[in-house]
Length: 121
Image (cartoon, rainbow, N blue to C red; front, side, top):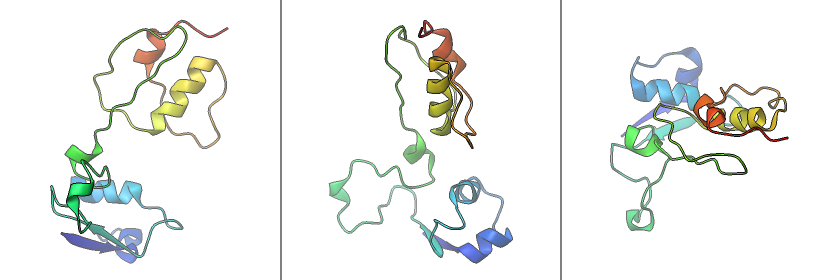
């Protein structure tokens, strides 16, 4: 396990490593804490690990893959077989509905979902 301070993150004093890169992307200067703690792979930061099947709170690959599903009128069954993020969900839904994405939206519409869908009228 290790810890990183907000001071080091803000100053860019971190190693170029996939885990550190994820921490930097997740860090928010007004919402994140003063110290970010990262557990060793396959360890929990809770006293009773039997309470959880998964945490989805660590930066490790096994904890960051979460399935998403789109369902609704005109959406056919299909699969997206590439890395996507939660930020892509709002862009996909707004594109499907034919409306503008939220201000500040940074995601990209999942074209695979839109190609499988009949547009909403």
